[in-house]
Image (cartoon, rainbow, N blue to C red; front, side, top):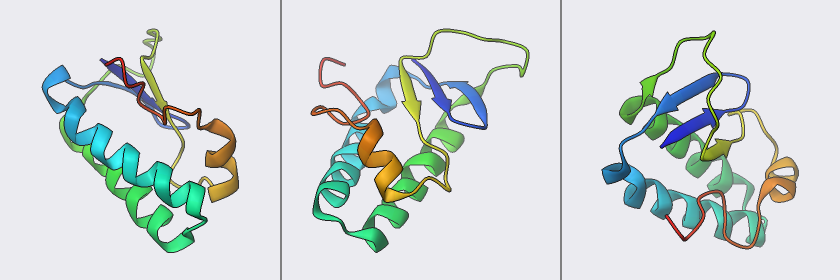
Length: 94
């Protein structure tokens, strides 16, 4: 799956890692809904770090359709709240 981190670029992440990312997404969703700023900051950072660690960066001049778009690390809780759908950042159909 191609993952975009807003303001950074895209990476290819193997489908075998989506379960781990989905767990972080679920935690992030709960923290956003609960207004837990400290938890939100920790989990967003962990989610982005895992995508960076697990993903293979695409060249900067490559623009592929992204299956997942994540906010930048400096996004606010309110900004992420606006980005989230009922399913979170990672659709449950994956």
